Length: 223
Image 1 (cartoon, rainbow, N blue to C red):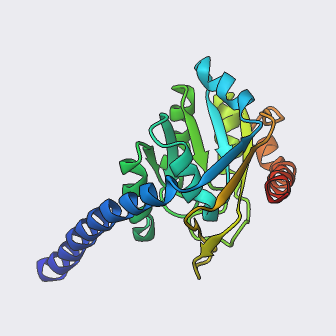
Image 2: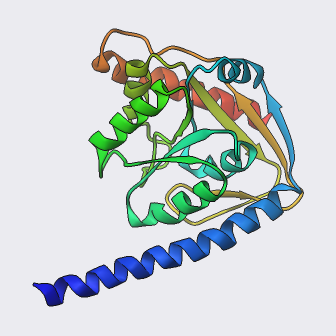
């Protein structure tokens, strides 16, 4: 038994070290790219007002749009829900280096812990970025966990959309977007909305409504 566990532990340590090293390089590259981006943010004032007054906000965005959000809101006391899966470790390390508070978990692994972490973090007054299609898709499929957490924490939900004039798209399930140097980024924040209903089941029933809100802000960002 010991002989089987030791190699697995060694691989885990090696993976963690690799993620830390890659995150250092990755966060540096993001900063270098980011200073060249021309960013236009639309309808951000309502979110800024809520945050200024210490109110929590649940930001909804698709997993493939995570990079621009991490950069434009770096070191602004936001929190991010990121998978405990090995694939999420690199993103988690990069997010931490950009000043993001981490909540670990997903709909498939650590779901209960993730939901509890979301609720607690929102109740503490944080802005929390949640990707309802993460961590493994399908792309732009909406899991209800973020809405349930926002409902329990009495936090408004804001759909987030971003469009880049020039970008690379990875051949991954989420078509992860990396804006190219000197790209124009248009970022749209939806009107803050409360999750309707009296319980978690009602929150889950609101998925179609918020899916539509995300489609609308994406269309506005694309122009």
